Amino acid sequence: MITAQNVCRHELIGLPIRVHASSNPTQTGISGVVCGESRQMIEICAGDRTLRVAKKCATFDLHLPDDTHVRVDGSVLVMRPERRISMRIRN
Image (tube, rainbow, N blue to C red; front, side, top):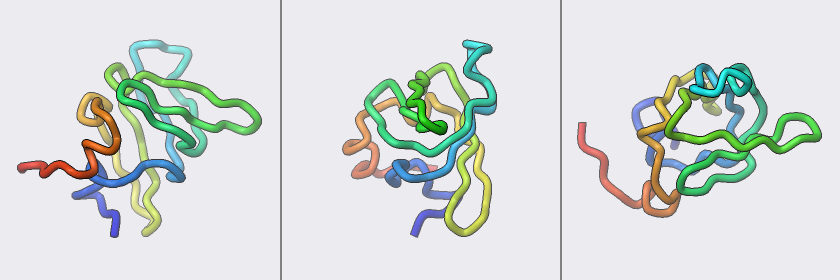
């Protein structure tokens, strides 16, 4: 089960997301659903558009299925999704 403590080790595709802050001011405030992810980018489906946001330069607000909101620094997510899911993260 995905929780606030282990969100970085789970699949993000399908989660509602909002860009809280970004080094690119035009990307701040983008919201939608995560529809794709690569090593450096997150693809957000916002209505009929698909927008790409660099993970390294942004902070994201994720809405988890149990109605909790988590703020995640994108630099923590910079790696291939399949590797991030399988790795052990130390506290």
